[in-house]
Image (cartoon, rainbow, N blue to C red; front, side):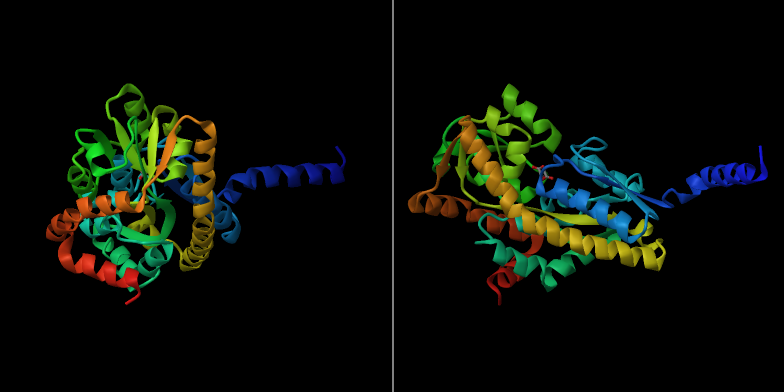
Length: 331
Ligand code: LMR
């Protein structure tokens, strides 16, 4: 081997042996329970893309969708234990952590539209709620949008009477439990990953979800009726293990904050469209019959669900509910 060739070979060998050192120093496992093609799934993938770009590969983000790693309750425990670093659970799932205030987001008809919601999530009330997670070992980074929920079952759900005796799957929120009870239904807490099968086999009769979740889990294939009631909101808080986050080099944390801010704008900008597309696709499939509430039907739902507020005040706190209502109204 001549000298030049030897040198080239040595340089290549050196580069190859150095390759592992070029791999990411920091790995963020981002676990979630929904399909990649949902607003949250797409937001997580966008965060991965931007985080890896802004940290020039120092950070690798591994996204695990569809409850691949953990189901609802387990993922929160895994985050606190440091087995995963990042999650975006729905706001309805923070109660079991001891952060009951988040259940105020589940109150029926509390947000007339997305603008009212944003006045909460982008304002002081939303910020204060995220800060409350610190003593649970969690840092709240952002709110991500999904959408307003529709109710589904195998029988039409036009008036509150139609819910009588139906077994309805809910997320682990006491406000949602009270909501279903107020409608005369029997609420059943169940992990998201189990809902399709439970609907298919009749373990539960119905559920509530934004269209994007209903469609990507194929729930429309096992639910004959759905009512576009928009009676409640489902969105997320993106959270990280606090010790992990605080332990990051300040420059890396800054780059990740920038990636999170942009991923948040992206996720929130696509949420409505993703839900509109999912609803249209389900309508086109012809498997589920969709019903829009008349004004009189809507009023009957609103009246039937009023007691949920009193019930929630005792647990979530009347102050929390009032602060949210005030912020939502822009006062
Ligand atoms: C549900 O369990 O219905 C939702 O929280 C799933 C999700 O993360 O959107």
